[in-house]
Image (cartoon, rainbow, N blue to C red):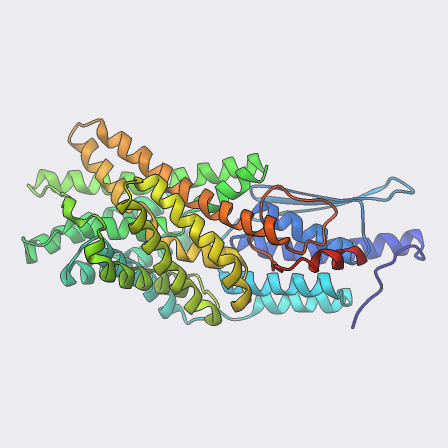
Length: 453
């Protein structure tokens, strides 16, 4: 049932009650979005679009890392109504995010009764997981196994990486359930990789067992908030972006500490981990790399609950990202610029594909870029530092540059598409960056529809 969006005929008390109810549903949806991977700009855009659709104007919205604040000022009485919500726990659940984004699009196009909107939000929040828990756990294991193949590992290394990542997932989940800080979660998870690599070395000394460590690093870094940090910073939400960068740094620091401590302990027993330079991507091994990329993306999609209708899309773009990256390396662009070019290509493609599968672009972009996580660079830097070489610091800085290049490149691709084709935005002002977690309609006629608000 549609509802009127005019508030001129309401009394002061009725207007205040109606405004509170509209702010309530906007805040509920903002919390769902921000708690499941959306950036600050998408959250603010969603809030302003919903409130305008319901006829409530003069609304200000702000997101500061974990705090969402909405305020409305009555233009007649200058009284202010404020709502604040602290989002303490965030996760990656792209099924819930996609459903919330779809509901936002429906409410903006055709607002329903506030009570009905609340019921729809409650259904989204209380709905069961899309995939069984064991499949989600196995998804993280597939990320590790695929990463092992991607960097040149054999079947023994891949199986070891699968088992290692499965153990890491159980370990970090158990620590998270006990409210252990995330730094110590990743520290414990990072320490597992070298230990499993030592077992692989004992079973088959000829295997490049260190690749198990790289595979676990890629798995642990897959969910790091670098993308959201770069998106927030480029969109002008500097406080939120900086806080997310700090969070990503702490997670990476725990991972580095865990890997380094475990590797040093093994070195005392005579096992020195090394990386075979021949494991770098080449055109000769492109079919294996594409297959491995698809395996990584599929596992990540299961882990973060990408909707089933979008599985083919994220796998296709994951393989495309790896193809773009290998071609860029073949053109001697270097890992940083190669990653950026691959991410730009994925960002451009995701704008069109996301509409076909009816999910926000963020779901496709983040999933497709997981195979390019700089785990090999990070571990190479650790090994060099352990040998007393300052080149290790440069390698670790290069790994950070690759992570930023991936996020910035994908955002640039989305920005170019949305700037050229003009996505529909029922908003009172134009935002700086592209909308990544909201439904984007790539047609020029959509611009005219925003006038009804």
